[in-house]
Every structure is written in C-alpha cells, then in structure tokens.
Length: 419
Ligand code: AMP
Image (cartoon, rainbow, N blue to C red; front, top):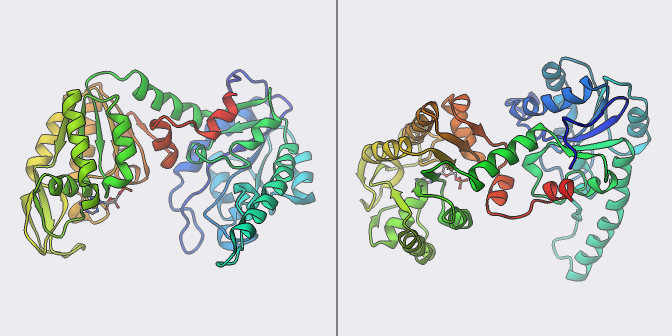
C-alpha cells in the first residue's frame, strides 16, 4: 500500500475526499471548523511536495442540485483562512468548467468542488421517487442511477493523477467519492493523515490495548448500542454502562424507573449482556444512583435517587454523586479507555455534571499515562463542551464509521484503498 509520506506529488494533481460536512449558522458561517482543521496537514503535504489539490466533499443532505443552503461556497473563506492560501471554487463538481479548472491547476494551487451530493450519483441512490412508487419502479430508478454513477465516478477521476481518501466520517459508505473512485487509481491511491490517524488509534485500542481496558458506553438506548457492546465484550476487562440505557438494565433487574427512558423489549438483551459479562469475568459498572428531574429542561426540579428506585413522575437524567465517584475511581485504575456516548443528558447544563465528571476522570487518567479514545458523535460534542479534547489521547472524527470499524465490519472507504 502506498503511503502519503512516500508518494511523489511533484507536478501531480491530487483529488482528496475530505469531510467538510461542517455545521453552518443562519448566516452560513462555519460554527465548528474541526473537520476543516483536521484535513489541513494532508492538503499541505501535497502542496509542499509540489502538487496541486482538488478537494471534494459533501455538505448536509441536499435532495436536489444547486440547493444554495448546502453549497460548499459558504466554507471557502474558512478553508482559505486555515490553509493560508487562495482556494478556487468550482460551482459544479461535474461539467466543463470543473474539468477546465482542474486541468489548469498549477502546483501549489487548490480547487474546491461543489457539494458532491448535489448529484444523486454520489450516493448511488435514486431521488424524487413518488411515495407510492412500485417495487419495480424503485428497482428501475436504482438501476438508472447506478448506471449514470459510473460516468460520474469516471469524470471525477479524470480531474487528477492520484486519489487520497481523508474522510473517515464517510468511510463506511460505498459512495462514488469515498470508495468507487479508488479503482481508477490502482497505483496512486492512499489514505490521508486523518484516515491514517483514525485507523491507527482504533486498531491500537481494539488489537493491542494496554490493560486494564474499560469501555464507557452511554447514550440513550440499549437497542442502538447492543452490537458495539457485544463486540467490545470480546476485548475489554470492564464496561461502564451509563446514560438512558441504565434504566433498561434497572428495569430488567426488577427495579423501578419512574418516567426514565426505558426499553422493556430490550430486557432480555440487557440480562444477556450481564450474564455474558459475568461468564467472561468482565466487570460491569452501572450507575448506583441517578440525578432525577421532573421535566426535561434546565428549570426542572431535581433530586437524587437510587437508579432502581425512581419515583413516578421523575426521570433519571444523569448519574448521581455515588456513581460519579465510583466511575472516576474505576477510570483512574485503567490503562486504556474508550468512551462512546454521554452518561446523561449533557445538552442541558444542569444534567451535564455526570458526563463532565467522566470526561475529567478520563483526562486525569490520560495525564497519568493511560491511552484514551473518544468517539461517536455525542461524546465528541461532550468532550468539546468541557474543553477537554486536548487532554485525551485521541478524539475520533467518525460517528457511524467508528462504530462500524470497531464492530469489525469492513469499511468500503478503507477496503478500496487497501485492495
Ligand atoms: P447516543 O447518540 O445514543 O450516544 O445518545 C446520545 C444522547 O443520549 C444524548 O443526546 C443524550 O442527551 C442522551 N441521553 C443520555 N443520558 C440520557 C438519559 N438519562 N435520558 C435520556 N437521554 C439521555
């Protein structure tokens, strides 16, 4: 496999799949530039090597071409500011103009293509189907978009001499720009630094963790985390299970959970997890007590209660003081820490102190030499909210991609580079 560090970019045009799917405010300003920032080292590497760069990305979920709201033109100035050079913008990722701009790129120049998802061919999924479309119509439409997808991929590939995939966040999708395009560059395809960093960090944790290894899994529901919990049970020494799923476990064990989020249909799954953990000698920590609230808002009345004895009309919204202490002590005793999912409703400040305590304990353990990996949408927002992102070992940019990779699934964006 080719490495970005060994490839000769001199005089070459590199097409880079970046993840510039950044949040914008009402004035179309970038409100969090983490993803753009992450891609800069890869772009700079190509430019420093004497190459030119064609950037391609999606932004949001446009349902049609040229939907202003989703135009990547809004982020040009943010990319320029972080990169420290001018960025040429192609107002369409297809068409003559984009091809001309790509062909006339000089070494050191950067071109950004318009949102790839303005074309249904990027995802290869048909659009505009009537709600009452028959199975036959759906199949026809799918066939048509798959056929035109080939042309789409070929056209994108024609802009460049080499391909770099640096979009870990979309690596679990077999889209035109994330996987299919790689076939056009059998000897000139590679990962960028974001991808390399992600794979190294996750492989390190999943394949050769320093022990003891704890996984802290929070979030709202057991049903969405079951696959990852099962996979992690093959690797970890202990599990901290927090967030809304606490109450499914409590309910399964016969506890009273009041109005807390609870999935009775998952009771057998919850019991099976506990039994399997016991059989494997994996310690499971559930929050002994909870912060309870009478409403889901900042001005709700709050109190504390045992997690298995929550009064009616109240719901568990965060871990309690005893659980904070127990989780902290346990985290500090571990050498590898994986955190996915907040242990409370961290979006509401009053219910965020449990997740903050967990984040602080992880930072403290990291300072003492543990390796910590934070990943999966909300845990990243959480660690950022507490300003602790630079106090942990690695913050993954991938949500679904991270979970699928940890579950052991082959990611199309990874496989297409490796094959
Ligand atoms: P997930 O995407 O599954 O990781 O879930 C993250 C969401 O879980 C966040 O929006 C949290 O607000 C939510 N969450 C965490 N703890 C609870 C809880 N006790 N009750 C309801 N929602 C929760």
